[in-house]
Image 1 (spheres, helix red, strand yellow):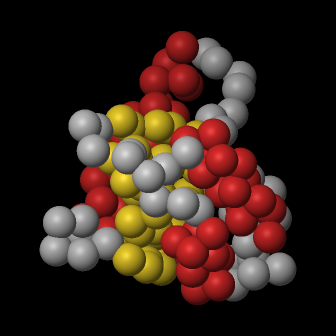
Image 2 (cartoon, one colour; image 1 turned 90 degrees about the vertical axis):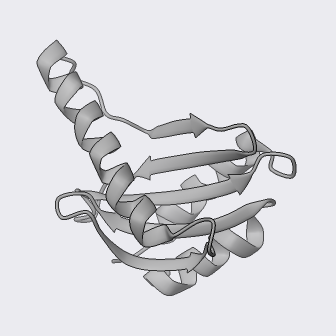
Length: 124
């Protein structure tokens, strides 16, 4: 089992093209941990903003009567991918991993695969 700090470090070192990562509580919008980012990518602001994205999608699914779970949400920008992975199991409900990737260096399929592995090992 990996701690929050170890999981985020793994995300930014193992996943090619990772610019930054955060573990976020989407009931409060607070980042429980961050790594990477920089002046052009404030992970605290990104955590709060992406909380609104997650809440909107969960609410929309409820309104539609969908009885399914969100695996991840992908936002594609001109130069970046932003990947939101909702955590499941072991009391992780209400949390998501947020990963920002450099689109020119990242392999999206591999990033998703690695993020699933990190989620499986994460203990909060």
